[in-house]
Length: 120
Length: 172
Image 1 (spheres, each protein chain N blue to C red):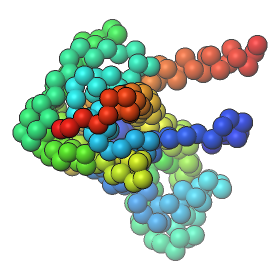
Image 2: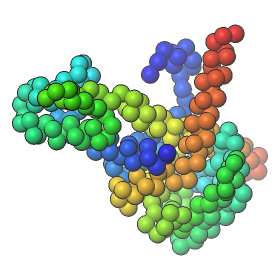
Image 3: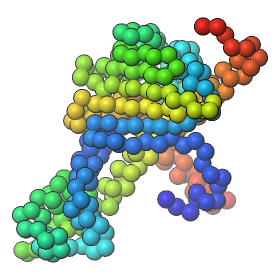
């Protein structure tokens, strides 16, 4: 599960490294849109936009659904939240470690105050 | 993120976690202590064992052997509830007293990540930077977060517990 999330996170970061794709996400944040609408908005060929949407979809940032001849794209919000949560958990591990490290270091400081600095 | 932050005192000393590239994760935090003492806490096994696996995690450190010199080996073993002990090991590749430490993480094979820790002292405080570099983007995906893997799961459980406690508190 963790490995899966880490690899997904990786896909997301690659997906987000492109300005057009970030723009597409922003656009989809306002409303769902079809591939052709997106292509028009970003002045791009249909094929080019399909590629971008494909990358976003693979990263789980966007979901698409084809109804008739129109493919509608929407934000995959759940995945974004999952990834933010992954980073947040990682940070909390380190926070917990560092809180205990604070205690250890504080003790060392006190010891030094009492016994003076040791010669190494 | 939500309205709760403003009700509590400002968070002091939270660690910052950043993915700086598709192969790197960087954790930063400032400590109110000279680099010399922090370095000691990272390099003396009996001190390291007291904080690397935080008490709040419900995990026990079974073994912690650190031979902190270039080429020296380390080995850590944790006991986890309901699963086999997890072991982490590797070699120190850089040891510069009070300023820099680097080691390999070889539990997943020889192509593991490299962890570099730097200690920068400014006016009695120390900026600590923990940098994990993976051999490739795929390796990062496959390796997860190294020693932190098991703890991420523990934290998922803790999250659930905290949600329950939070809900209880709201009710009373």
